[in-house]
Image (cartoon, rainbow, N blue to C red):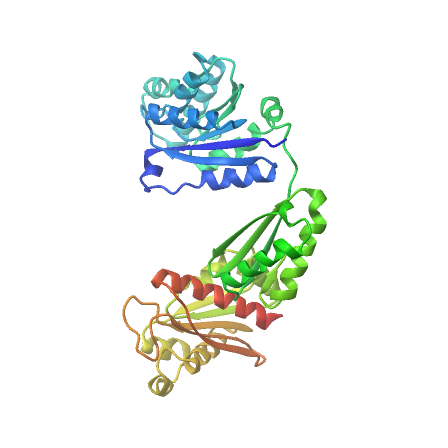
Length: 420
């Protein structure tokens, strides 16, 4: 038996794009981990009729569980709880214990801010947050907004909008007897991720088509592919009994595309490079990527142990003055060239005293470029202090943001290759 769920993300600010939805994708991953099939994620503004329409749609689709995010604040446009109560045919009642908890939170916040406020007026505005559907399970606030679990068919879990509040509250909600009962029939799935680099999507598609006839039991695998930051991500979900089928698929991918496969355990290239830099130090010299390579390295835990610094040098004079690139070399080959990338890497090693360096120089656009070096031409050099190096010139597709993002990915893969 499969347990199915739907997510309703509310908020006019999310609907209009002023705020990016982070809750839908995060909840989708958590449901997948639990073996729950996500049927739909819907998005609507802060209008009662639209919120209720999403709830009715999901109920009509036969989901067992509905999760809402947003609309739990004290202002007039925060009305998710009231709409859910009406949808579930339950009266809204004041929870006195919850009201006291909210009052305590507000007092602490007021005291911490050191401001004199009309506390009774603030409490009156927040009293609506203590109104919950009759018979609902209250989820204690992480901020000031409580959540609720409303039993029924479907069961509804109402969560706040800020991710820092929603995420811990979901972990509490899923442990309640009511939610556990609703998801008791779920199927356990395994999920495995393979990551590839340097392989066209068309070649992977051909391999997966062949796998339909060459891998026995292929239909037992649920496969999704995604192109992200220039890498191919293949996520496969399957029941534990289908593990031999997945193993056969993995053997096929390795046999046909072994050079492109860089991760079979879901590890990101950033994680792999960070692990390879253990005990080493690195510096970056960047033109066209504006320090994005250093930023990716700095996103990894413990980066202060290996990332010494970065030089972002767009002007030729900056390359000369900050990295020691010979101006005659730039005049002869151009700022976007393999020799200049090599000189930038050497300059980064010397300037920071690192044992590893990565340099990139390119034309990201939107203007510039020549017939010989059009927009998207990018030159890389990764180098170690003992003289090992890899230099590459490539042409990357897309606009400015695409070229810059893909350049950082190419740089990380060149680092991985050099350090292994």
